[in-house]
Length: 138
Image (cartoon, rainbow, N blue to C red):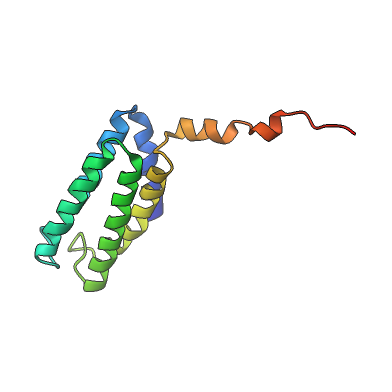
């Protein structure tokens, strides 16, 4: 289910036009840095991680690559929290594990340019240069 949530997240972003889509995702990944602050687990390291994602999110305002890196950093943070037993949602023991499965899906989408579903479809359907040229007969 976490992978499906990541795919749905990317799909819903299709309704947000560029450049607003990139900016929105930069804000979301920055906010994800603060997801564990109330639950703690790593003390002041939680604030340090939040600061790192603030910088990454700021860079993400102009680059999907940074947004993708931010989601991969958050994935690592999810794994650490899952192993420590301090989940993102305290009442759901495996919530950090689920988040660690969802976040890389979003990261991959961002690292490939944060395309809308329509843009991905057109890219996949566009013939390559090799298929447009006639085959030489000999």
